Image (tube, rainbow, N blue to C red; front, side, top):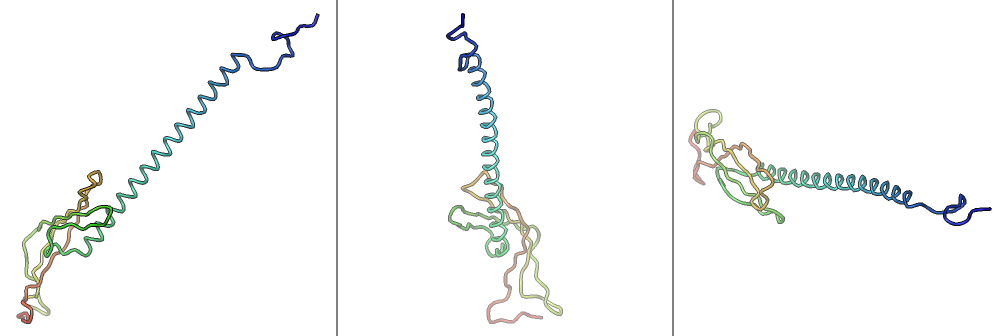
Length: 146
């Protein structure tokens, strides 16, 4: 007598065990995909922080290139999204420059350590540079004495 119903060899469909095994395999695959996605997003966030830090340092160095720390020993520069603050400390004694071919020059000079920081962005480290400071030692309209 032929068998019919759920126990017949020709019955179609999945058993409960086959369904559970398929769900476990699917869950493991989704977990691996989630781990990959989380790692990629963390990497993208790290790359964004590194690019922002690079931008901050580049802008601080560009400001250092035009800054005369003897004339402006402290100040701030607003760049819209953030602000750069600097503070300069003289490293050595203030000296008189020499004139050409000899004698007293027209400038007072000194070396300065200049620290740039970002007050609204404390997670980014400051930038420290050594700069040459100067200012004219001659009154306008007066000639330097050779």
